[in-house]
Length: 87
Image 1 (tube, helix red, strand yellow):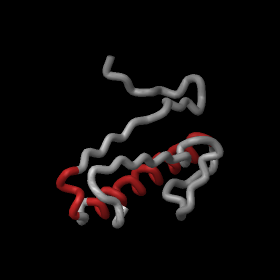
Image 2 (cartoon, rainbow, N blue to C red):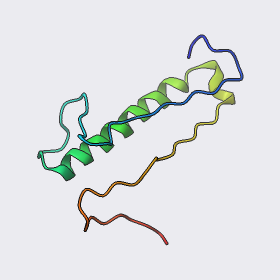
Image 3 (cartoon, rainbow, N blue to C red):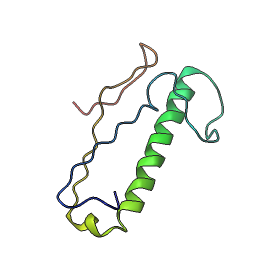
Image 4 (cartoon, helix red, strand yellow):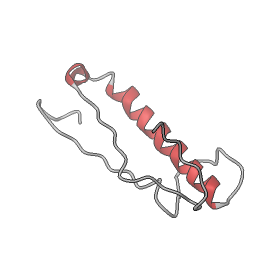
């Protein structure tokens, strides 16, 4: 991204929050059940996205940048797993 010319569009896809929920970092939460693996993967995604934003904020092109983050789906590890919805 240091060599792009403006305007530009970049797309980044992550797969860490998809099964088998493997992430390249030391465990943050104890346990190895499906829910904990999923939780670890969400933590990793959040940490990675935050690191990218911290890096990008130091670049000249940041002042003209719009970042849009969307999910491709909502995951339920178990059928009875609660998912918050304000509606």
